[in-house]
Image (cartoon, rainbow, N blue to C red; front, side):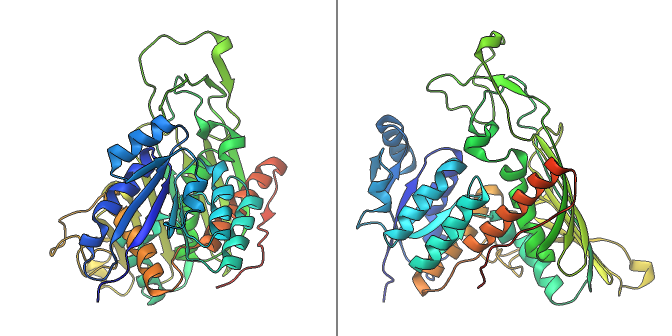
Length: 399
């Protein structure tokens, strides 16, 4: 008996919205027959023109410039939110109150209070909820967690992660929403660092205390031109505008933090979106008393593992090519080393969300994971302001 199709509304049609759309196009075929069909019912963007263009380009049946025609519509089951951070809470809470399941991009919200309200809303509604921490669902991270849970590297002693990119190194990149605290919350810390923090929690457990440092290297950027879709590159090579056409940057370009985990492990996490020579480098290393694991997204189809039980003459890191016997990689080819990439990561995310909805279970990572990450981000900001260690304040919540 065929499963009932899941009807989706997408709120946003930018870069990440495109990634979600491409995955919706083929996710059922990718995981056939375990997943239901997907009906791409309606797409929202901020103007009728952008919405219509996005729907046509990405293959959605209808377009709207009113997101409530998605969150409150009787023909929508799943609301997928890919807007700037500040808009997440209002949309998600409205969707939950109208009985929708929700997939939301990271970070969960632009501040911890909004993240808490989102978590409380989905708890009250009882809907399936998922935050798009895609890197934790990647086969390398899932396999690393499996090895840790099996005790292969023993007790975790130290964790290190960093997320480095160079997209913001151009001082003439316009003042897009990512550079404005009232829209983004934080800069590199929330944008790319939320992924690194989530990986830390996923592999090494909850974080109790943090000591943070935050730095802004470019404190003014050109005001964005009306109608511009610039996000990661400036749209032209025009000369720098006059000073009157610049606005203030009030978020971090780079953040570094020391962290203490609940089980006694220690660690460091670094974020920087002005790191020359680094192209989407999310890397982590987990060190235990019986071995270690390390990963770098720039070699996304490999995981390196060191086990102290190896003979001395074979001891050291070994490189494991990911293949169909590793969690999450089962449908990406019948042999190791065939390779999968950034766009493929969204297949894994959507598989989890759609399967959870179809089977009536909760998806992972969920809004509680998003809230916990927001609480850590909030603690880092408070630490950077006070120049002191800060204890992470956890709201009530458990699975």
